[in-house]
Length: 194
Image (tube, rainbow, N blue to C red; front, top):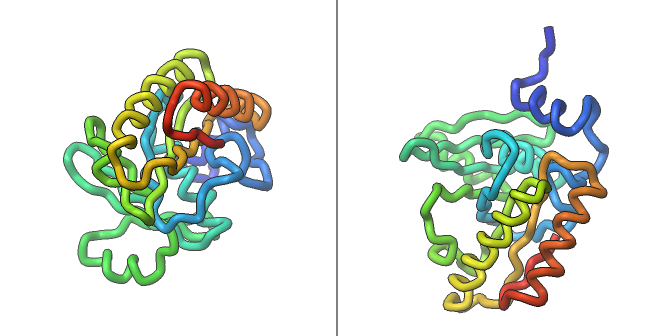
């Protein structure tokens, strides 16, 4: 019987049995910004988004220290803390003040239908998680067009949207994200980076 979590088992299924040493391709971009708050938008992903959000938070916790993940499920907010050892802990409402003292970085996953432009403040960065198949890339282009038009009215225009690819090798993830970035450079006012 495995001591690994269900999430780790599923991630291993998509990524292979051994995890890569560094934050590459599947789940984290090597050039994510150092902002204290990342706003994560989930595009067309293979399986449930929570698995990939947790993987991103776990990877950031390994490199940046304690990371908080805030997500909304069925109109409820859920907060999880990820530690460098790869452990995660659900945080009850009364534990939030203590969590805020130790967390160095927060990932906030917006619920469906929430306007990304409404939450862009100086300390936030936008991250779009996407799969690498053709349908996912097409959906990502649509989402990036919507974001770009919303972000043109926000005082922090020019800030890039960072693409994180999941469920792919480094090469496939780099090709998908690079193609989206190149497409965006010719089509959008908002820069897209991987």
